[in-house]
Image (cartoon, rainbow, N blue to C red; front, side, top):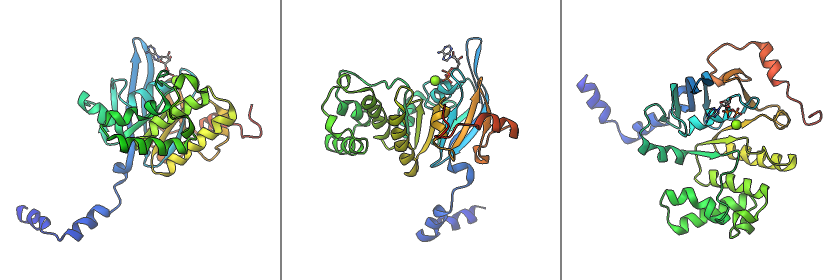
Length: 277
Ligand SMILES: Nc1ncnc2c1ncn2[C@@H]1O[C@H](COP(=O)(O)OP(=O)(O)O)[C@@H](O)[C@H]1O
Ligand SMILES: [Mg+2]
């Protein structure tokens, strides 16, 4: 046995690299893996036995009515809430027993756009967006370059020096998205980020999220808007209801329990753009 290992060590470097180039096993290419996750607030069960997995570069809507548990799930996935029961692995971080010193490392890989923006009104657009880079200790020139690039992509380059209290709601939302994207995270969690925007702006922001996915990021996008989802009939959707995943419309979701076809039809009869209510 020992001799066998020694032989392995003496492989020429090219052969070793070939081993590394082999496609990852299915389980390792998963960016988010959740197993039997449950969460309660006192007596109230917000999540019950949730299991699914998402691969690299997947874009998925997390649908469900208000109170279904979408925010709770997203908060657990970026370690803003502890795991009470079950398991979750996000961007290779095991959230069970995650030492507090590792939380900033996890957050470098996981961008979050909150429902209520959470931007600092008295700081400029540039300061708000560079915040996560400052936490990483990047040089000023490097930070400026990254902030400028993401601002150009989001049409904010004219607003860099303006305080966030003086820009419009739509611009504030774009600042929140820019701040989540500037670190180039592997996973992007969006909590109803288009909730307070008019339909035209919502669709423009959606295009940005879809673009981000094409760079290989995994995007989990919570929304209760059937109208918004109706514009993306091909999109993967995972439906949460009273803390349980009741349906997913693609087999790769790895949703643990069998789903009835009826439940799928019920939950995904989303209106198309033409007949949106
Ligand atoms: N901090 C909290 N304390 C008590 N109950 C909460 C808390 N956060 C969420 N809940 C409850 O958990 C359930 C799921 O909430 P949430 O995850 O915010 O749902 P959603 O984002 O789908 O609207 C709701 O019934 C909500 O009232
Ligand atoms: Mg919510």
